[in-house]
Image 1 (spheres, rainbow, N blue to C red):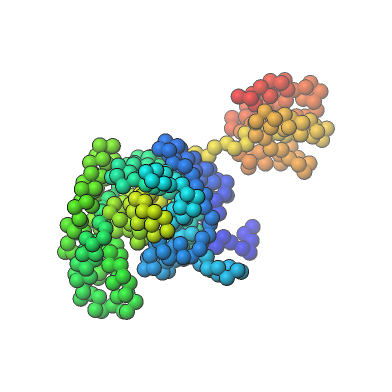
Image 2: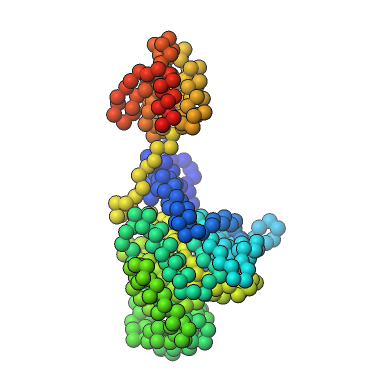
Length: 424
Ligand code: AMP
């Protein structure tokens, strides 16, 4: 029955389980993921923000960096009818920080913890685990320079994965330094790849020169070979960065986080300073990306505000949970289906539905005079677990027959007893 239109390439409809094209797009899994997002927020004191789906393009140009893949290749941007250049948000941190400054939630010595959950958009080549519209759950800890803040964000991240059913995640952490020492390292990288650069086109060279660290997460096998033997970024860290990174590792050990230091992690966005981290899966690559971004608030016109955060890819977390056999089970949304077994019982069926709902019990019923058989079929499709059947006998006796749709067991009970069951 497929119609003429389909969801755009790289996007997916999230629909009730029987209709989903892939298990990860079953809506109950998303409801569970949202619940995990909120549960984790509550456990650590993060408050939710919901920002617009689109923003001024400039917000992302300024924060992600012109040479980032996001800005240079992947942005869904357009000029609106008022001539404003806007973009569908490609990530969640810049909008959350814009909102933080706009309202303003911070202030001297104030620490603000924010969370968000929602769709983001990137024009890239779709494949399993990579979409053009996907969802990020994010947490931002704004206003603390302490490595304890980095450790908390990593703990929050691991907790999110645990509650999604992924018990054994290992966090890869690195420090990319800041300021002058980072610039020293960037020069060292450029020097190291000098021969390779000479063979590249102008655009590739210009990009590499603008942000040499980006070269480090290349998938190009030639460049990978060239990068062999490059000194580690960790050898270039300034004293403060070094001390923070050591302290972070101490805190991670103390809180029992499974982690490894991986100096190849540099992250794709310009705004990171010092700590960066990822959780990586063999099948789907990065499941999340996070780190410290001490310059971001200032870059957006706010006061200097050291901050750290994470963005978690929800589709990928769901894919991995599915592979691990840890997916959320469907929950019963609407427990009852009221069946009118005869024409004469239709009014009474609607009356029972009203009474059930007044008690907070979810129920659905046929509105189109369908046969009893069709009503039971509909009850199954709706995922109902109990059918409340009223026919001529029940009408006469003031009873309701309750059928358990899972076991097939049926009992005829007084009307008020059925309402009491509904209260449970
Ligand atoms: P990033 O903002 O690039 O660090 O992305 C954060 C997380 O979002 C990544 O670690 C992935 O889990 C997820 N992600 C990034 N790009 C995509 C995509 N195109 N489709 C699905 N998930 C993605």
